[in-house]
Length: 603
Image (cartoon, rainbow, N blue to C red; front, side):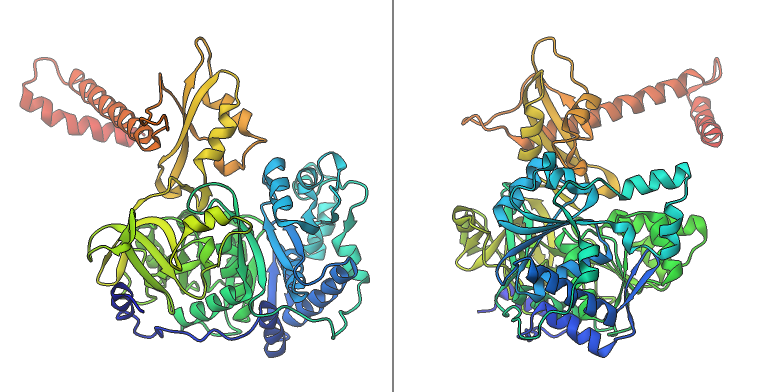
């Protein structure tokens, strides 16, 4: 039964259907259709190297045959450990063509984390960037897996590849950031692909309900888990996305693939949705402002899915360099809150719209979104996506819906929502309530629009990345001199939150930020390493001895505010001390603004 809150949301869907049909397709069908409809249209522009849809389909077919000859069959897992590049797209669709499961991995993840994930998904074959070989094959040990290496320089334009081999310090340094050594027993994906023939037509592909991808997350509790998303989940999101932005024209869009494919946002809304729309993907191996502006000049972007800090940095850089962004009709901001000033400045610079989307990996990944129209309400999570229902309930009694306008936990269901974590029955029991996914987020609904009120979970979101305090704490707690640690997120401007580690030290121990960051360098992903350290005499605990992270966060914010007030008082005192001798209070007040102006001018 559709909830009242969902009905209020749907009242705002003017040009968007409240329900969408989910075709009984699979993800490989999307590429087949695009190759038939737009064979000569560019599928990929990777730093200037162009690949048409017909060429992409041919290479995917050959790569599928390569994997089949390596023993990959329907239901097997192929792990993809590489940055965004052409070979990544080829390997993804080739894996899916066989009905196998693509397990997306962060190529910069620490060794222990990556190995734990590869074991959890039981990866049969690993296709990995050369620079990730130390994590994939520590000490040259392939761990019984078949491993193929990816040289991303092979995706570059021929002239660029030739320039990389010039005997110059600059090109040598650049080459070293892209290439790495490969252990014995590891083959080359590109070399094998060149020799591969076409996949025999009788080899069956996946079914609509089969699992398509594995993505890794901490879910709503923070413990590491694997999210299986089916072809049906992702095909449903394709139908929803196309309905949500009716102005997009198949075969005429250019999507900037800036966000990493190992993130649900980047994988599904760039790599797969781009293929569904027959769009050109402007692929970048990492976010770099100059790279984005260069790509924009080469092939004007029309749709940009990104996190809020990216929009702000791209706009500022474009203004400084006098570059136009007016081709970007729609920007989709997700993974963290969008500041209203960032949104205003972006829309002024592009003449287009920037909308917010809310979701999670478990929902492939969008549940709510701002209407792509003047009806949008900046600062809200938006309204329900087509075929998506939501409830707002008492977190302690999820059977009890709260009154409109009152805060409660957001529960959701829809065809894009997964059916449960991989081999995690206890976590699944916590994640679902009578068929509804519990998001763990506390929200308020007003006239169908949903606004985030608080996070029930203690997830830290920085630059669009999810950071789980328990994992950071585990790494820091092993550090010599550290007795106890609590990790929290505090506001940090456009990036959302920064990671702060509150430490309790042994008597006489000295631990600073530089030492903590050095200690964590090989234990945590770069975005999870603490950006600030605070030393406390003790951590606030509950009666059961559990560290109260919320209290730690309050202490840090209070101390920061106190320092700001003290600094303001000090500056105010300095201004009074330099006022003319013998001046009255009034004359001192008149002098102060002039002194402030002079100081500002000199700065």
